[in-house]
Length: 439
Image (cartoon, rainbow, N blue to C red; front, side, top):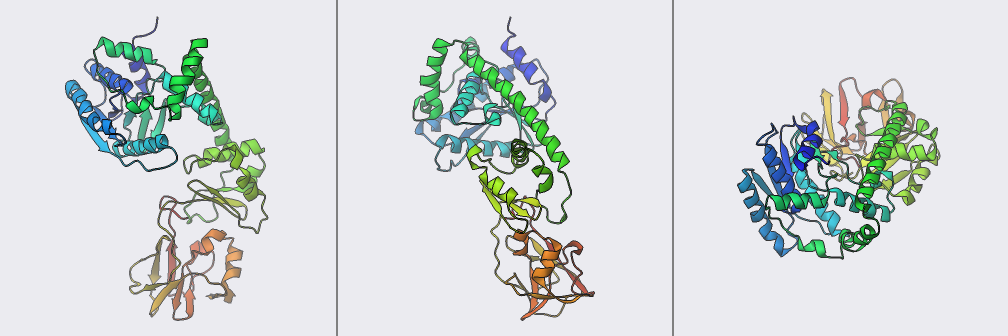
């Protein structure tokens, strides 16, 4: 005999019983309405975290303007606070994806440290997701469909109803005489998910009545397989965990030699795992960029452009450069007050220690042919110094140089790569971090 829906929910949510707060993503539809009602009822007999609801108003159709008031009436009847958040959906090739991105961005604003956002996707949603991604040629990670839980911001997004059928949710709603919204767009067959829901899946279930449960079970098997691939990737990345020779350059990087020792499939698996928190991943047809970067000559400076940044190679190391953040400007900057740090647009910050040389001072970037006075070594070509240091090529064009008129006074000491230009003063550069965006 199947456990009752409230008991099933208590069991599934056990790992998050001590969270600081639970938020329910309330669209006003069947699944989220039932989820909120279930939790509000459970809170009367169980010790649960503080409960609230969040309604994201996309503004994509006129009918949606009435939904916040509907959600407010539900929350008022249950004694649950509601937060309504308006979002701007960015135009793009997929309206479904753009609306989902806007919704999840709103969730990140709500979820505090350790808090949980609960959404109402059910078993049929999981089956649709698997079939949709299968038709798009997704890999194991994509075919694992929707995970029960994942990290979002500093908290978690949890889908406690993935093993619950829509029929169970409808039976519960009718038992408690709940009212819910039927989104008119859910009948629009121009949307791929709606086409699967109304045309494809009914035909499948007519021939195979257990199709929904079978597809959902397959997603669980694939999720387990993806977990094993993640463990393998962690082992391979741990073997490649060699410290960067430039720790002050605060960007994700990996040594190339340990990766080369892996098979192509394990290389791709390890890189997918490493890149997942950094960028949207390429499909299987677009990995040629990785092989070109990997196999380039040692003195080459190849890069692999991805959705949210670039993978660069410097010698025998690969570096991730995000696209987000300030745009780098190589325009000259006057440093009128050298006692204070100089902000370099899109390039971090420059500071002095010691006695500031007489001015007027200016910061410029490399043009080629620069000569630098190096204590104990005399005048040296800057390009040769950079080659000796092994500094990655993508950093060299960003290296700030201090001038007085046409005289190059010095370059940042770069954590001892070469001595400072003077015993009286040193120039220190703090490049932007990965979070700030060095691209």
